[in-house]
Image 1 (cartoon, rainbow, N blue to C red):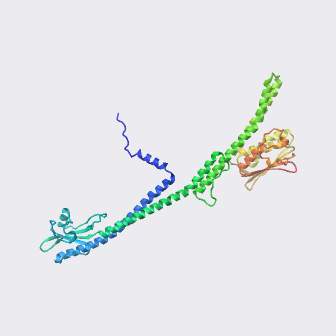
Image 2 (cartoon, rainbow, N blue to C red):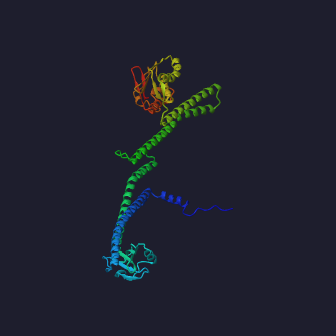
Image 3 (cartoon, helix red, strand yellow):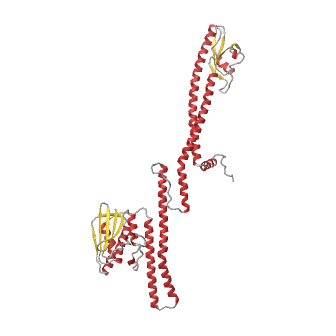
Length: 467
């Protein structure tokens, strides 16, 4: 069986490895490297363009001088004048075989053309080439032009050359200046990039350090977000602060739920344990055991009601969005109150309703039991008739439940909607003290307000809910 081919080193396996190393670098270092590489490419391109333009201008001038000198040299050969040239120039007159007939002092013994050049010129072509490189400091760095000249008695090859020293020196100086400028610009750009990256990421680091302090359980911690800005980091800070507020609220709800549950469940559980212990202590008659079981059943029902109330409050406190839907107001009030008419009738109490026509946009799953709680409280803790009024105007549902009882104790009104708050007169009656707290939670989740007060006839609880 042929083993599978292994990928070449530095190809597919190398790329993820390089990317992994890159992503492990600090963000500031990555930003500085990205700025440095980008600036290097931009500066190199700009420097290359400048060098090319200067070199082209210098070459054009040098070629123009060489063309003029070559023309003068040809004229001298044709007229038989003494061969000469301007300063910084050189010339040679050669036979077609390459033998030097006449030459300037600079190139008197040096063959400027090779065999291929000689053959090309002898065939009638014009040859132009450079001798020596840009980095060479030899004074015999030349640009030459060779052409065939037919004299009356013979054919010669005229080679005109001009020195490239000034041109090469200018280009070398330009390269040095560009290198210095590029280096300084790259250092400055990298420094500016580093300072910019630090300035941009320092707030994030401060946010991280402040958020890390939440690990010790400190409450009320907020990130230091400036109020006079509206950039990405400021919006991030506001978002994180909102998240911290939600986390703190959720934590507070959890602590309150545990505290409320442990506090309120302790008494019925203790009573249940006592009832069972007494029943098991010695044999009991059937009638006495029946009474004990009824007592146990009552305490179990109380535990169930209390647990359901606590769970409803917790669920309502964690609800971010309500399932609002339009519903006819008289239909909503009737469906919430009708289950309590029989209980009011048994106590010979009148339960009257005054509802104005209209439509409200609420979450009936929560509003329905909230209204029922108000009526149930009035039935259990008051006397006389109960009156419910409801209107829907100006985008608000306004509902009031009044009774003809003694009203709320004055010291109870400020805490009427607190959890487990119960007036002294009602502590002996059934209930957990969560009814009004549930009503307040429902109203608050709808963006409304609840108010409890005393009237000349009794107690009144009013709800104002945007709908």
